[in-house]
Length: 338
Image (cartoon, rainbow, N blue to C red):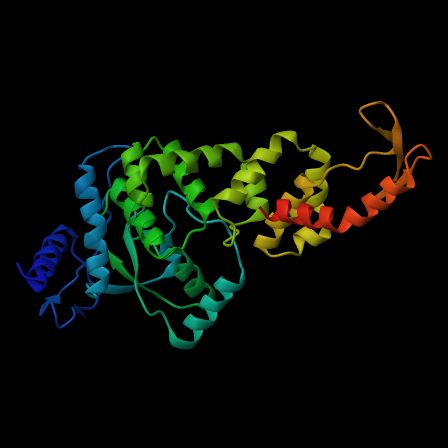
């Protein structure tokens, strides 16, 4: 069967599932050679959360079909953003960063280029629930414009798979947002196979993602934000330092003006740096050889450390230490970088 016939068959089947609509008619692409008449969209209740009414293969197929509908320009309607609600599973941390402002400017200047995907709201007549396109809806609402959307009947399982796969395909969610999305699906008692399909992730990767999510306090993640430049290794490093961290140190950095005024990636760096810093010991101590001979005394005052060679140490030893300081510092920097 040709690609044209496959898409046409898929769209025809999906159109029969949709309830009548009084929206204006919308043309398909010339590739489909069909015109879809949409009538009044009514309230349709989707399957209960956690109910596996369809096989995982069919759920994944629904995700592909949804993308085909979008690509084909199928049944695009304009909706009032006030009638559109987000997915029942949150997948994004609030962030008004540079990327969001760029999206606002792009839509303000050239309009909404691609439609979002929604389903009829499962509990509110004449309302809709987003599968993907949350930021576009937010921007269009901010600009006071209607939202171009494709409406498709989706079960809860289909919605989260479409939602997750679309974000994964566009590399739209940061690593920590993907972890929170996985935790939200887990909390709703979704099967691991559904979560794997939603995140396009194999079992071992998903286990690591969920484990990391559980090891980090939600309020700390929300304080830092999505941190798009920070990947798994550095989040893991942060999680490993948290159990040993003093709460006072963490509270100080989170409450500092520098942290509050920084972008999300810098906020992560500030937290990790604060937890990585070694407390400076106060007072003095002696450095002795294996034979018990005092070689030098160390004096600490605040952040300053003074090294005083003892008279029992030979001048030649002191000179040797000074000559090797540059090499020691180079070795220290190399160990930090590794």
